[in-house]
Amino acid sequence: MSIRSPFFRLTLAALLFGLGLALALPSAPGLDFGRLQQALGSRFGSAALTIFADWRQLLNDAQALGEREKLRTVNEFFNRRIAFDDDISIWQQSDYWATPLETLGSGRADCEDFSIAKYYSLLALGIPNGKLRLVYVRARLEGPAGPYVQAHMVLAYYATPGAEPLVLDNLRPEILPASRRTDLSPIFSFNSAGLWQGTGNQSSKSNLSRWQDLLSRARAEGFE
Image 1 (tube, helix red, strand yellow):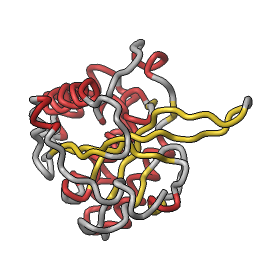
Image 2: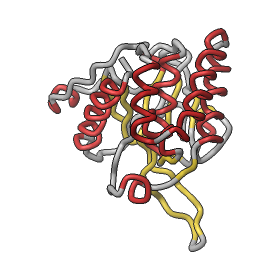
Image 3: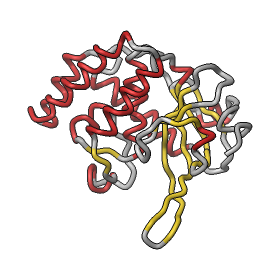
Image 4: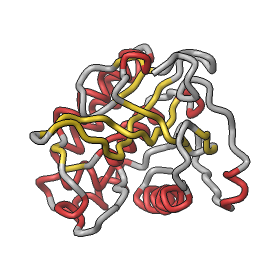
């Protein structure tokens, strides 16, 4: 993947307005921990409160860290504490985007859920929304029958608007510059401020509808 790829220089798409989607979320959302804890306990039981307490402690301890250390801390927490699984197994749906609370409560996640939980956590740690993008990619993977390609989501961090992004991914534990992730081909990226086009032509309308629905559910849980 070239450093000149649209992965590194994405421009705001007029498509956002054509879709008619409002992607409104505060750049650094407040967290109503009391409401979050109550919602978690009532839905997932007391066993889920341990990881919630650990996540809350992580957010407290990491506040004073630099941005790169915040990335590392959040990435490691979710990659180590949450098990990968598919939506059919977790939610009995073919494609469900879980809120961070649902990811913590279930203890399982697919690629979208990992990326979304990391995104919300980094916003809560004060990283500006403009530095973070959820990126839909095609990932080239190795399987028993040989290489194959599948849809995947990662979280990208831009230290400055023109910088090469760092990629946070549940498939690989280390945070790497995008130029070293030649296994990923970007399709489009987005955050709560807008949509950016990548190299693909896949329709994004259904995915952004899921994103809008997730933002609404997360606010109801206590991500304000």
